[in-house]
Amino acid sequence: MFNSIVVGTDGSDTAARAVELAAELAGTQTGATLHIVSVSKPLSAATVGMSGLAPASPAVIDAELKDDALRDLQALLERAAVGARTRVAAVETYARLGNPSDVLCELAEQVGADLIVVGNRGMRGGRRFLGSVPNNVSHHAPCSVLIAQTA
Image (cartoon, rainbow, N blue to C red; front, side, top):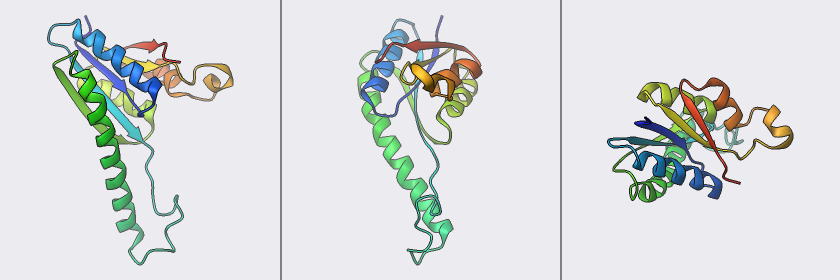
């Protein structure tokens, strides 16, 4: 039923629970693939206040910041994938820059996902009206969405 599952992680305990649930679900499906993605908002020299401090051009600083962010995301993804691989054989990881909910939905479309799993963190109180990741994904996903109880 769910042969291609996308799940996001930011390295938090609640995200780890969502990854664990997604891996458990993927493990029940013969031939399923689990796609784990971690997203960081893009940084630039201007946004971190480095444009006047370094002798390098802002473009060079921006490229270094992007490389550092992607390297950090990849390390986080490798840790998440280790646990997931105990439950499902096919695990793919993706380190991306952008808006987390947009990236989750775009990746789900790119890989032909049947399901996106997100944790419920941010779904309580006023935040749910301000565009939390689970709320945005639930409204814009190209496939089914499972909002896992992770809090």
